[in-house]
Image (cartoon, rainbow, N blue to C red):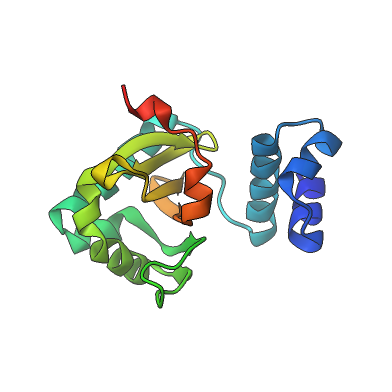
Length: 170
């Protein structure tokens, strides 16, 4: 974990190059670095129960779809962090901290909630948003103690084009 974290975050080594060093796939190397980041930040360990993670993420999607701001806030840890790899809209922050701020961001995109489909992102509950049948964003959630503590949003068009989402067609 530490090796993947230091090489990637401190020296900007791509996960494709870290993978053979760690004896893992690029996705596994990415997960190793993610776990190390959480340890460094002192973040709580994610809930191991995938079904429980899915319940919390589904409740979050339902609250966004229904426009229930209070329910959104209740599902978020007070210190939740949202990170995005691409600003949408272009002037939006790529890092948002705190339950109210993250809920406001989710509330702003409530029109996209009906297009969210459950997926696994790095082995945890996540969602892919596909309006008009094309990927708009992939969201990975970290759920700890029954609340969302972190949301990673990937919406960079070049990055999304490289994803194999063919499994969603059937």
